[in-house]
Length: 202
Ligand code: MLT
Image 1 (cartoon, rainbow, N blue to C red):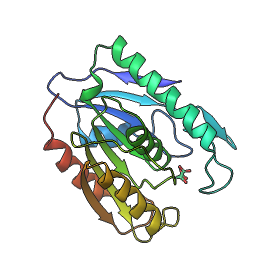
Image 2 (image 1 turned 90 degrees about the horizontal axis):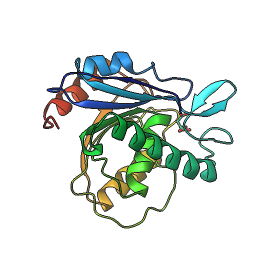
Image 3 (image 1 turned 30 degrees about the horizontal axis):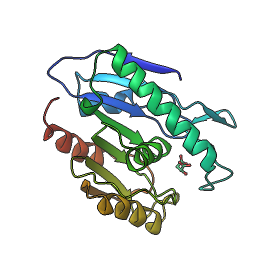
Image 4 (image 1 turned 45 degrees about the horizontal axis):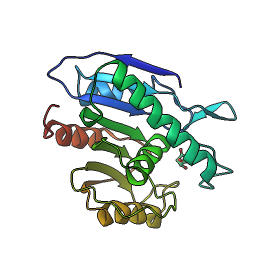
């Protein structure tokens, strides 16, 4: 997969960025800069193309997910995260995944479906992909998640189901409501930054 990597300060957190539909590995750099100015950054470009737009897995129309593609691309993403982390000598524990929309969806799916050493995530406007996850315990996983009741893409049932998935697996969840649909807002960035600063540095 195409990616952008930039080493930051040892004393800062490490951010793993996953863009939304139509974005690329540069789309969330400004967000990352706001969240943690001196972070080490690893940012992937989704390898699926939909009408020229990059995504992390295929769909057959809005919210009609291609589960074969989801499984394959999640495996590929995890393989790539592991490979770059090994190359750069960064423990998987030390990444905070920051995903928006489609990127947040594959991040949530990766965390819920697999036993990995990834432990922290900021998920902007994710949704349930209607997958039955294996029972596993995520008490050592910390997730910050934003949603809006006026989101035209993420229905209230889709966010409720995702929250239930994390709760069933006993992940530590912090929820942030926003008021402008699927968009990223300054207020949620400030809230996410404050949550991030409460996490220990590596
Ligand atoms: C998805 O396909 O992951 C969701 O509909 C969000 C998006 O449109 O990217």
